[in-house]
Amino acid sequence: MSVAFHHKLLHSSAIHERPHVPKGRVCCLAATTTKPRPGPTELAMEPRPLTSPAPLISPARPMLDDPSLKSTWGHRAWLACGCTTVLVALAKSVVASCESHMWAEPVLAGAVGYVLADLGSGVYHWGIDNYGDASTPVFGAQIEAFQGHHKWPWTITRRQAANNLHALARAVAFVVGPIDFLCSDPTMLGFAAVCSGCIMFSQQFHSWAHSTKSKLPPSVVALQDLGVLVSRSQHAAHHRAPYNNNYCIVSGAWNEFLDDRKVFEALEMVLFFKFGLRPRSWSEPSSEWTEADEKDWHQVEA
Image (cartoon, rainbow, N blue to C red; front, top):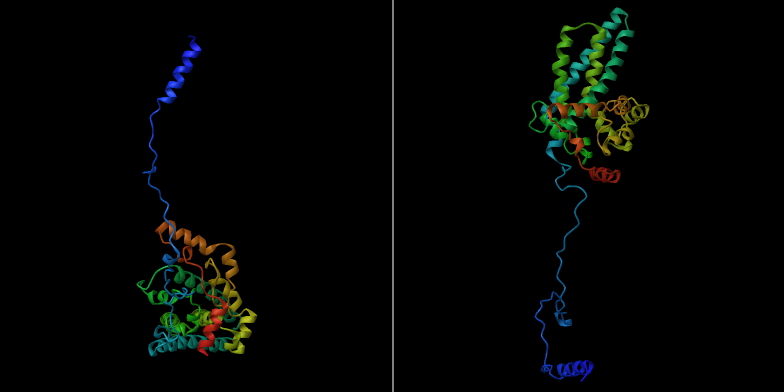
């Protein structure tokens, strides 16, 4: 018997001796993640709660009849005192100029006071916008009044004198009052009258910059168009991101100079690295104010 024939026999016997496997159902024990499909009767729609879309402006915005935006008799009294001291200084300057026949110096001093008042209003506006809170000494009420005015600029038009104009009038009364009694120099009085008067009414100029022309007296519109007072179009840039420019609110003459040279940004960096004070303009969210929104508020007021 050859080797090949012997190998064939072994192979055939191995095939015939294969154990018999009974036929039946094969069950797989492996777990699967496939879920059975629900029948038509098992389908159900989950009810979704009916909610109105989120408002574009926070519901916590001040209301039109917010008492904090209204002036009180105390505010009016301080405003009257401030106006009185300014008018006394101006009258004494005019009288002294007539007596001394010296007009150029007081007029020039008044022009310098007007220019410096615009710069002072920018510094004041920048500080109130970016630093402190309601608990800040001296300026706490003004800071609280200014909080949110980027989101709700119409609050400036709602008798902002209740929170800012009267405070500036009080400061003017304390500073200019002694000058009225102690000084008789027409140049000094002219400078004090114009500079303090423009600073005191800078908040009113600010308010006019947030009003439509139809709401303003023609004389105010003319002064805005001439650049004597800050215009609406110029101040609108302050209410666009990044909210760190166009702070001056008397005439706005200093805005381009200060913004081109990054003066306020440099001051912010100095205060941050020196004292760790972070200005609000670095993190303030995008303004939700639009022209249409402000017009709507004017229509509501009307």
